[in-house]
Length: 140
Image (cartoon, rainbow, N blue to C red; front, side, top):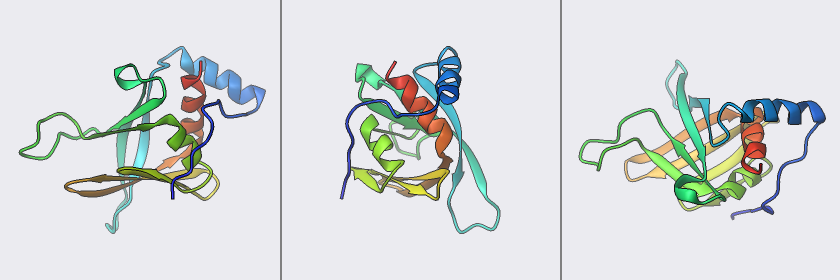
């Protein structure tokens, strides 16, 4: 079941707002994040991922891009998924899904993104705080 929220900024403290404003000057439309790739391997794998706001001019959309080339035989480029900004906001609080993207909170400080593609499923675990700061900047 997919949950959504109103298209409005998240609340927060003045200190968090000031930090978000300072970071917004760097790059309001995108953020680089470190994500843990969830696998059964004994050693954890960390991936840098890029989260962009308003791909192709859609102010309510986000795009997540992975740092690896596409699979052989694909049209090239990096694997990416576009989804509504409200989906990420809802997924920070409760399980939410739309299409090939599922998001849910993992404890109090992390979130899991489940990304589906023809080649399989990718599970990424990220810290929630940078996602919240990024979401706030997307409303400016």
